[in-house]
Amino acid sequence: MKVFYINLVKLLFLLGAIITSSCNSKVKQKETNTLEPKNLTQAQTGSFGDQGDGTYVNPILNADYPDSDIEQVGDTYYMITSKQHMSPGMPILESKDMVNWTNVGHVFDSLSWAPEYNWDRMNGYSFGTWAGDLAYHDGTWYCYQIDYQHGLMVTTAKDIKGPWSKPIMMLPKAKVLDDPAVFWDEEAHKAYVIINTAGKQKSPDNKIEGNENRIYEMSWDGTKILDEGKLVYTGMGAEAAKIYKIEGTWYIFLAQWTMGDKSTKPGVKNPKNDRKQIVLRSKESIYGPYEVKTVLEKGTAFNNRSASQGALMQAPDKSWWYMHQLIQNDDIPFQGRPQCLEPVNWVDGWPIIGIDEDNDGIGEPVKQYKKPINGYPISAPSSDDDFSSPKLGFQWEWNHNPRNTHWSLTERPGWLRLKASKVLPNGKGYGPNINEWTNNDGSDSDFWRASNTLSQRIMGITTGTAVAKFDISGMKPNQLAGFVRYGGVFNLLGVEVDETGKKHLFYMNPMAKKTMGPELTGKDLYVRTSNKINQATYEYSLDGENFKRFGPTFTIAFGKWTGDRLGFFSWNEKEDAGYIDIDWFTYNYDGPKAAKPL
Image (cartoon, rainbow, N blue to C red; front, side, top):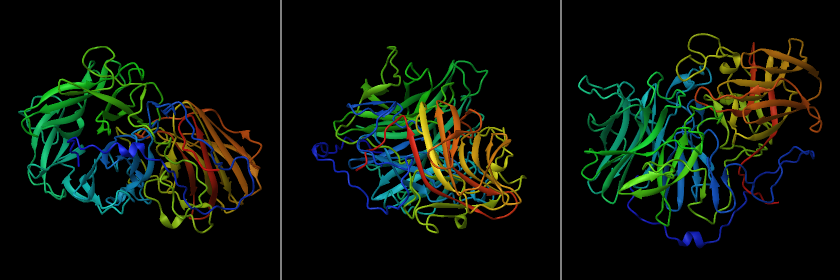
């Protein structure tokens, strides 16, 4: 529940010993290979996150974890972030210190509420799960989100790790745009949700330019809307509200655009424009009247990159902190919308976020700062995988809902098997639509209509190298399979089988143009891909020792509101036939990784 009465978690948990238990998991027997996953003897640090010296460097989650919301229960902070058409949807992460986050699940096992998210349509690019709100009330977890194409929904669970209920639709898309946030007022015994309704209900009498934000009363169980809503604020691009009540005062946090140059739209790169964090404050009522103040704007730490939209937190020592995303509207090639952590200083009853570096009464993001809570080990979302578990790791997500009959972790224990489906038709109702959330280069390529592409986010923007081992012996004629990097564009390195059964290496660029390579006669293929900032390359090996460069240096790009990802593909141009097996995947990058026992 978003109630921030100062109810401190006792400091004793900081004094307790930190015990890291290792999981009992099946260890598969494999040949010794210098590229296989290795145990770490100590935690790894890098260019972002926990620095191991009591400080952190922003972004603390330097990956595509957009639209965060955070709920604290006990001594643990839980975060959700959006991921559009990826399935499972709405990742869940947890942390003990606000800096080190690990992934623990997803809210939506699948995007079950609409057919366009299924493997046989793949027509929901950029939609699906958008910014959500995570809440805990009376022993129940709630997750609210608005699918732009379908409306406001809520799902519930007794355990943050699930199972979560089937989504309940609460308001139609005709009334709402995005970004719900809820609040239970225990004193008045009333529940509320604030929503960006944009211009969908705007009357001619409202002459203020921008989005309308309305507060609706909900049933106490948080599943029904009880009224028509009341308008509380209108502003340019105003959205992503969060409601807090602190020491009797109501606060509504909102992201809003400041347009210094109206020749471009909100969100379009323009140095004169900025997405800022504003706060509405009222001592009278959740409906206002409200005073308004800007509390966070872009600064020097990220080359004047806009910063806003996030969640307020409190540490056991009563200090306040704010988690927010950086906005993808600058030349810096962040791969998606990473998460930053800022100190919050209260000045005359206003929460000033970050450090006021220019003394104008508005905070700016920090690059490096002391950690809110000490005593916890360095950790990070999972990346490496040897596919020993009968369940996929939480780092992996499918491009749309998968065809579950066409992948397996049990048919060949210790390996991930991806069976090839026939690529979907290149016609209406299949694959990406061209709209303001997609880029049209190569959008009619087979890749975007091939089911069961599995991937995870890249971490950081400095350097990274991923390696995977494949068994290609199960491939069939007209099948293409291998390694993919994709976000706004795709770049593939894999194997194509011709009509006669011969296998050839190939590289495919974002416009689906193939460069053919040598014939492959063995069963093993190793693929390695490296990037330096946004420039990437592919290499291949037949023995895991000697790698050869293949294909050009290419640019990884943000697009379809998605940063670059690393993963695997498998499709067939003519029929459902063939499979590829993946033995293991490793990923080394310039950022934090947890220690592993020897």
